[in-house]
Image (cartoon, rainbow over all chains, first blue to last red; front, side, top):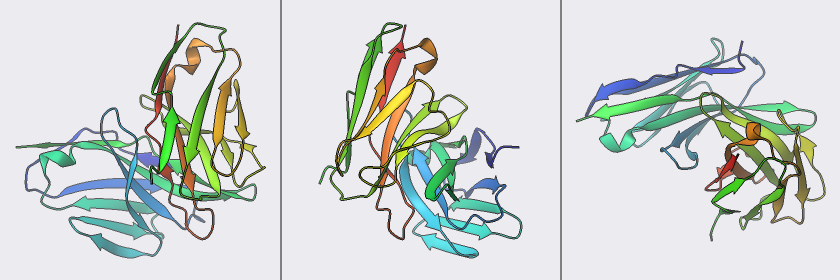
Length: 113
Length: 113
């Protein structure tokens, strides 16, 4: 079992719809969770982070965390074609005295007009 | 404020050649990281440096060496390149004190023939 799992997609949604991206993780001790957006040929860009159970909203983005079920999700409201990208989920792990991010393989989102 | 910069952007090597990938950050971050990204594999940690003067192995360190030259710069060296090292390499940095968000450079696309 991978430490951070995501459905590779593609997830196809029409413009204006809500896109829902999901991620599960195996380390029950994880405390910090991140969503990165990566356009094709570009570097990952941090869009959201969440540390506490519940929802965190930032503009059209909402991150949801459920530590009991070990999943974190990202909702994108009013999806736009410019949201088409790969979304990477990352989980902070403290190991060997240092903090490291463990990344999922990413979910490709395609928003069609 | 350029953030995280990497050089070169593209490189083609022959098997057995050596090269150094350069990374620098101007955000006064303590921690720096080198990742490789391969299709379907997500981001995998090669080496990291929690602070100036320290380096440690990540998930896939074989065939690589690193140097944390000072607080700003963290280089990755391939001593004898192999086709399996064809990948996109990203450098990232993090403040290292109380927050876990990492910020990425633009990447180096390396092809080994």
